[in-house]
Length: 490
Image (cartoon, rainbow, N blue to C red; front, side, top):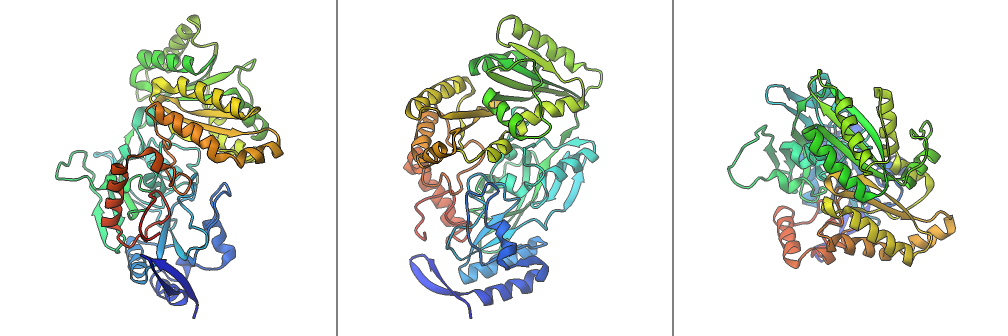
């Protein structure tokens, strides 16, 4: 008998791991259960190699009913559950804790598209559906599912919903929360809440789905969703614009939006440091302009009308911007391949950083108008405190979300900087909050910022969140140790 000490609500008891595994195996079968350490390794470590945990087993149910039965067993035996999608989390939300007797419930086998309703412009999918596959299914039906991330080839829609993912199309279509109409969720006691409603208007009480979107698996396991579809754009224009500074980016955003209206679907900013990293580490990338510039904006317009010449509309806006000094230079893609090459500079920044070495990552948001102030003040403070620091700043400037990452060029210096991560974090978190912002725009809290949030949310707000957690998950078996600090059973 394999007995593992467990602590729950201030009581210590022994878990019979063999009995747990046998009971779960009877539900999901041998193909739905992984216990060998060499096979579970990919599920207990995040993709950056920052977080490492342990798991009794990895469970891969094939249906919602199987998820529910597994959860019932875990609730009965007081076993903690870590729901997992594509395991692309940047804050440790999707991996188990170290030295904790937990199981990982991977939704990867639940990847079916259940229904497409073209007249209602909705698609119903299971949580394990890979985002790229979901986008392709929408495109095959001549529709657009607009959520787009650099990790879309591996991330899953359940994880996207659980973290309220943002991406590059938030400016026009909103976050994942804005794209969801209904959810199916397995609750911490194993009950199945069927909220798969394709309604855009339903004013019959609390909108429960919003409790689970962005909760990082701490309130239940999302197993399926009804999502919005949009008309498939027929025309696209993409430009890389050289700009002198972040303030010019805000001015350019205002000008392009005023000139192009709702056709503006993407507006990203990146510093020259970002571009240099991509050119150095990502094969096949190249610098599209004749000389380097300090900052760049990546601008994209889309339209459903085939008669529109979006390139002409964008060129007119950019010509005006260059004449007044808001923009320094620009190139408009002449083909789909050129547009993809421009986007490759932006989408490969995180991968280039991973290859280059570890860095201190931040995912902050401030009001769009205060982005230049945030970057200027953060740069000045950190450069004074840590001479030689390299700032890699980029992000979704159209919605106020800046990824602000810090490292040193020299490996030994970088190790010293990493050891002072808490000091660097305090500068960024305090500054973002002072400007009316947030310490997490789209990555969530996970393990990384779980304790930090106490400093930035009011006691009342935290207690309201704990009250919801206690009401839905009184045993605290759903992804414990993530998001919320100060729970009695931890």
